[in-house]
Amino acid sequence: MNALVKFNDEKEETIYKTYKEVELLPNFNLITALSFLDEDIYELPSFPPNLKYFESVNTGFDKIPKFPESLEFCNLEGNNLETLQDLHENLRHLIVQHNKLTKLPKLPNKLISLDFGGNLIRDIPDLPDTLRYLGCYDNFVVKIPKLPENLKELNCDQNNLEFLPTLPNKLEILVCCYNELTFLPFIPMTIKDLDCNANELEDLPDLPRNIKYLEYDFNPVENKIKKYFDNNLDKYLDFQNAIRKKFVIKIENWYIKCKNNSEN
Image 1 (tube, rainbow, N blue to C red):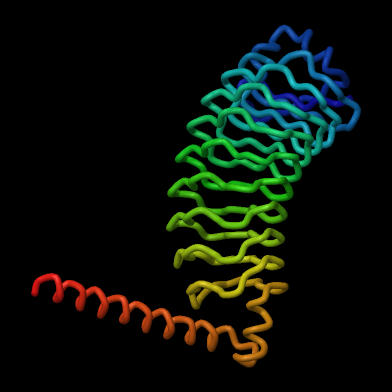
Image 2: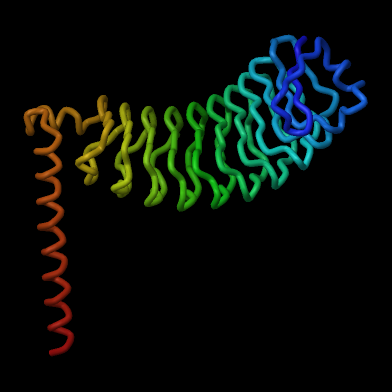
């Protein structure tokens, strides 16, 4: 086994052959960063009490000790974890993709990025307002809770979603392919990348014309655009916008008429 260790946030790294060597170090409590570099670890006895950075990718963990309160970054990708310990408020980044998790604990209020793709999770806990990235792809999610206002990227492909929540106005990347979506919510003008392949979309909402990346294949709307609009997305969007404007005008006229009748 190899363990990569840093002390007191120093730039220098030291490699130890066994974790037992690490535990016996006289300055064990001063370790702030710890990474495992191979694939033969199944259980970790304990964390250094002042640890800030922990990474263990594809190492076979099926159990994890209690997280220290100092921990800010945690990457446990590609292990065999079925549960997670309680998460402390200092945690900013959590990566637990490709494990065997069926649920998540309460999320810290200062969490910035969360990636739990490739698990067995159905329900997502409330999301903190600080979150900027959410990766919940390749699970069994049926509903996404209210999204934080400052979220920049949402990757929720390969789930069982029939609808999406209101999208925040600062969202830039949305990946929602391979779900059961029949419609998309209002798309913010900040969106740069949108992948909604392989859903049940009959129509597309109004989209930013300067969008950099767009995928909508394997949806009913794809055939509609090919058949009636010469496979020209702009023509389709112009037509949809014209229909929406006519509808809005009808609603406005109806409202004015009702108001005039009530006054008479």
